[in-house]
Length: 61
Image (cartoon, rainbow, N blue to C red):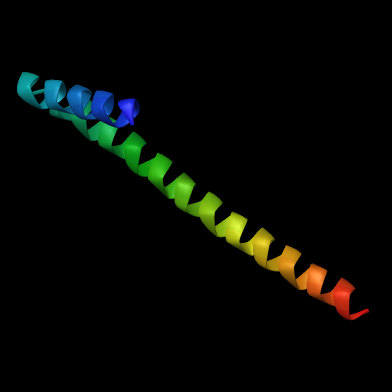
């Protein structure tokens, strides 16, 4: 949670300084991290689904 407040503060500082190139780069970095997190969530769901299916197959056998 502290990281979110820190990131917001950094973005606000860049905006107030008029450093829009740094602001854009920072937003791009944040966007990439969010895409990575989303991909990891999908991977975890896939692994979880496969584990449940495997457990069901073992139980039936």
